[in-house]
Length: 94
Length: 233
Image 1 (cartoon, helix red, strand yellow):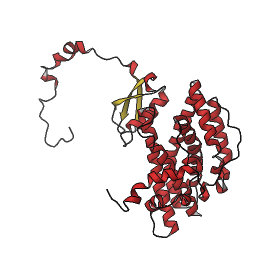
Image 2: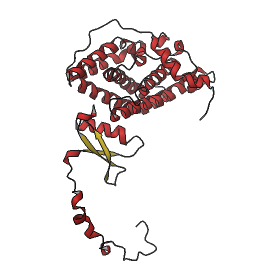
Image 3: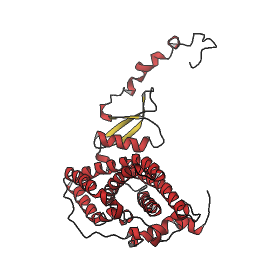
C-alpha cells in the first residue's frame, strides 16, 4: 500500500528556540496525512513541539561523486574553527 | 451511578484498545501500524483511570487490574460496537470513526461535569480522543473518496457497525445524539457516502449481554493473569 505513496522527509523541533532537525521519513498521500504519520511515528515519546514535512522530491542532494571537490578542501583549514581563543574561566555555556 | 458510568467507559476503552492491539504488526503500512497502536495505548491508559475509579466506587478492595482481568463476560459493561471484530482496515476505521466521534462529544461534556475525578480524566483524555476522531474522519474521507474498492470496503464496514450505534445513546447519553448525527453526516457527505439506512439497533452491552466475540477477546486478554495469578515482570 505504501508502494504508490510519495515519500516525505520529517523534521522535528525538539523545543522552542531550537531549529527543526531531520529525523526520518514517512509515506503519505498528502501533506495532512504526512503530518499525522510523522506525529505517530516520530513523536510518541515527547520528541518535539513542532513538525515539518517536506516532499522528498523537493530535496536536491549533493552529488557523492563531487564529495572530494566539495568537502575535502575544508579538511586542512583548521584556522576556520574558533579554537585559538582562550575562553576565560568564568564564561560558562560555550 | 459513578460506578456504572466509569465501568462502561473503562470497559469501552479496554476492549477497543485490545482490538486495536490486534493490528500490531498487521496494519497495511508501518505508519498506520504505529497510529493504531498509539490509539490503542491511549485507550488502555483511559481504561486504567476509569476502571480505577470504578473499583474505588465499588468499594470491595479491587483495583483496575482486578476488574480488567478477573471479571467474566457478563460482568463487562462495554458497548457492543467496540467488541466487533476488526474485519478489514476499512471496517476498523468505520468503527473508530463512529466511536471516537461519540467519545469526543461525551468527554467534552464530562470535562465540564460535577464529578471532579471524572472531569479530570475526561479532560485529559479529550486531547487524545480529539486526535483519534480526526485521524479516523480523515481516513473515512480518504477511503470513501478513494478507489472503487476502498469505497466499497468502507460502505461494508459502516453497514457492519451501524446497528451498534444506537447503544451509544442509551440513557444519559441520549443528549449527544443530534450533534453526533450532524458530525457523522458531514464527514460521510465529504467522503461521498450515504448515511446507512436506519436499522433496528442492537443493544445489551451496558447490561452485560454481549456478542459471542467478547468471550474470545477475554480468553486471550485474560489468559496470562488467569494462569499465573499475581505474576509480576
